[in-house]
Amino acid sequence: MSHLANYLHATDRSIEGWLKGVRTPMKQGDRTMSRESSLIKRIPLIALAFCTLMASPLRADDASQSAFSFGTYWGPPISELKKIGFSGIAGGMWKQPGLDRLGRFQEAIGDDDSFKIHAGYIHFYFDRDLAAQNAHLDKAIQALAKSDSKLWLLVSGRGEEEVPREEIVAFLHSVAERGKAAGVEVVIYPEWGGPGKDSIIKTAEKALSYIQEVESDNLFVTLHLCHELKAGNGDRLDEIAAKIKPWLRLATINGADKDAADELDGWTRTIQPLGMGTYDSSKLLAALKSIGYEGPVLLHTGGGLGRRAPADHHQTSFKRFQEMVDALGED
Image 1 (cartoon, rainbow, N blue to C red):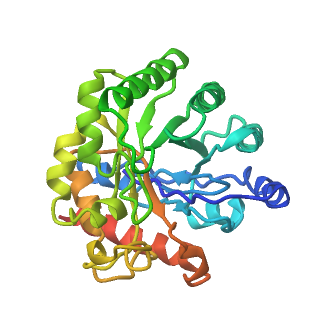
Image 2: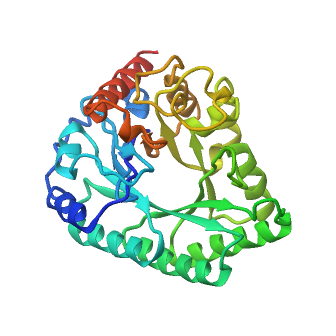
């Protein structure tokens, strides 16, 4: 149930340094535990970098996670993240440079099953060149298929001009079917947004309404703690998780304040290192455990966190994640 991811943009120089650490072997923990106690322990925690996400399976003796950052900054090298416990990546694939980076990661990781590329992130805008964006989506789907990775899809509208719902549904159906043909799961990335943002799908429940209308068996959803908090859903995670259970493929976690919904602009209170803030982020893990979720859990470090968090926030977030998982296992 735990993969933590770190989402960052990378320069070519940073990429080469990152790749040097990819092959660091991971320690394999003792897997001899009861089914009941191992369920929550196996949640993988991931980190997102290069517009990538880094992840790792969580076990009782080896909790793993990754960091998820939206900025143009880099996190620790992969070798360091793996020492902490991270075991996977996911990242942005904007234009050809993004696909090139994905290819480098795939080549470097090779057949190393201990480190996985979980998803590639693309933001589709209805107010931009649709043909060019769709062509890029097709390239991305083919590239993601090589590493059995998911397509993480965020959709924005046309500013003040409303996009007809039938056009959105037709687009989502098209992408889902194109992904299915290549063996790539398409996962909606809900984003609450803010002033000046026109994200069409802001919450997991909103995504579910589209998934049910699209009627494809290859369209799924993410449960983002930070975006649900912005929507005022911090005390409804169990309910939401139960609703989206059949379609849930990715989840993200971070520290936050209880009044995050009041932060209309910016993410200072809504995205903090895990363990910081006044909101009990373990509610997300409890919600995931309640539905038997065993997929990746991503550590969300976007919203400019990299510029204001302590240098060791990956380590402290990982430690806090382990503590929360251990506490859930005792329930």
